[in-house]
Each structure stands twice: as C-alpha cells, then as structure tokens.
Length: 386
Image (cartoon, rainbow, N blue to C red):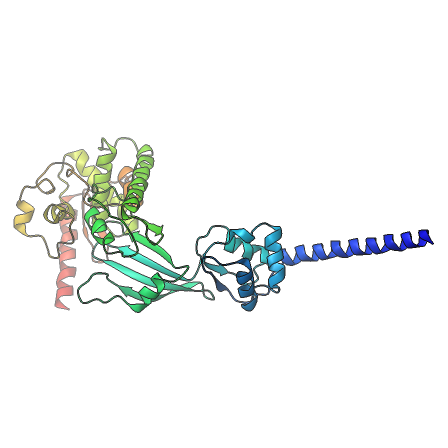
C-alpha cells in the first residue's frame, strides 16, 4: 500500500515538474517571440509610473498579449525597477523583451514630440514637430521666432514644452557667429542659467545638442567649446604636409572663411585650395566675408552689399588690404570646413566667382576669371530684368 502511494506521489511530482518546466518554457518563448503589434506606436511613460500601469497601457494598445506575463518577465529580468520616463517607439512585432528594454534602458525618448531651437546665420527659430509612428516621419506642428516683434508663442509650443517625454534640442548652424549663438540662447526659455560672455569666435562647434529642460546655458556653451576643441585637435593631427598654416588657430581662421564662402559641400576643398594657393604665392585673400565681419563684428548680417569705400578702408579684417589671414575666425566653422582647410584639393586655382547655380566657377588665370565674372554679371542682369 505504501509503495503504491509513494509511486503515485512520485508520478504526480513528475507531472507537476513537467508542467512547471513547460510553463517556464512557454513563458520564455512568449517573452522573446514576436509580439501582436501590427503598427508602430508611441508609449508614454510619465514620471513615477509603475510597471503595473505601463504593462496595462501596453496591453490596451495591443503591444503585449498579457499584461501580467509582461510584468512577470520584467520582474524575472530585474527590469521592473528600471523604468525611465519618456516617450518610446515600439515597432510592429516587437517582443515583450524588446519592449521592456525600450522602456528601461537609455531613458532617451525615441518618439513623440521634439522641440528644436535652431540657431542660424540669419535668425533663430523654434520648431515643434511630432513623429508619426506609422510613417516614421516627423510632422511640423509649429515654427516661430522667439522674441521677434509681434510674434506670439504658439499654444502648440507651450503644450509640448510642458508635456512628458518631449525631447529638446539646440542646433547651431555652420557659419553662425559666437555673438549670434549667445544672443539666441538668451531666448530659449527651456534653458536655465546664464550663457556668460561671448566666447572667442570659432570656438563653438556647430551641432545638434540634445538637452534637458533647465539645462544651464553656460554648461551648454562649455560643451560646444569642448566639442570644437576636440575636432580641431583631431583634424590638426591629420593635416597634410606643406600647408602655409603654422598653428591650429590659423587653421580655424581659414576654415571659417571657407565656411562663409560656400554653401556647397562638394566645393569646400576647392575653395580651400584657392586660399592656400594665394597664401603660398603671397597674394591677398580678397574675400568679402572677412570685410563684412570687420563691419558687423559678427553681430548679425550686414543686410546690404559692400560699398567701395568699405573695400578700400584698412581694417584688421579687410583682406583686400591686409596681407595673409585676418586676426581671428569670422564664424564658427563646421567639421567639414576645418577638414578642408587642413586637406585642400590639389589645384592651381587662385580665383573663383559665383556661377549662378549656387556654386562657383574656378580659374587659374586672371583672363579665365574675367570671363567667369562676365558670365556671372550676365546672369545677374537677366535675373534683374525678370
């Protein structure tokens, strides 16, 4: 009798053990297998959220088949206490494991609303846009110039700035001056602290900086300076031999001129070759952007053409008058312009002029240059006539 009881108990134990093993295997498979989601969604995780709240939200949106199983998996993988506030993109078919990683790892929002304060060479504007999870494309919600006369702050901006998960960026365009950057940062109301004095021209790296609400302006400026210093140091070490540049500072001055002279990326190294050739031959650089900087001191655009008297007047930045480089950069150049200054194209060009298409026509001789100038003047005349 006792043997029969023991045998039955053992049988039941084995069955239970197999059932548990099967349940564990099923749970593991469910945790890592493709999920039920058919279209991408954004999942909002407000500050202070619990895994219970998040799992129920995921189940309601059809991202997971079982909220309780998702919580069990999160507990088993020790992710329940790692929730990050933000807005996270969940791709179609994402497994519960992938979803858990998305809401607990980086803490960086991957979808939802983005506010980007763009500091350009003419103006600084605030753009609000939202990511459409289905198309994976951003759609513009609002675009305005903060602090501009007669411009009211859109309600869409205020709503987005106060919403959970909104990402904030400050984007500095290539060619913006240090004064323009500092002046613009004062109008970014989602930043905190003081930006401090205007840093040396050329010392701020054009880049798109992700920030948090309340980020200190001074710390952000320091980050821009550190990034630019790193770029210059790296590219200076990789410079080609024989350049007429004695210091990294001179390379930055030349890079800033290249930045202001062309908006065509493919032309940077050619433009660099013109100025390098001129420096090597003892020719004056004769570039308008330096003259303009001498007039404006980097505080905004000139807003008109240069006068003959301004081209003739001797100033430290008038490269029609002075020999060699001006004393400082005339803007904050991007990485590619710095690279062009330190690795120019191998050409014999010493002249260039606009060609009417947004680019430039280059020439080795004055005769060729005069022909290019004549063609450009014809293009200008035709445009004026139309």
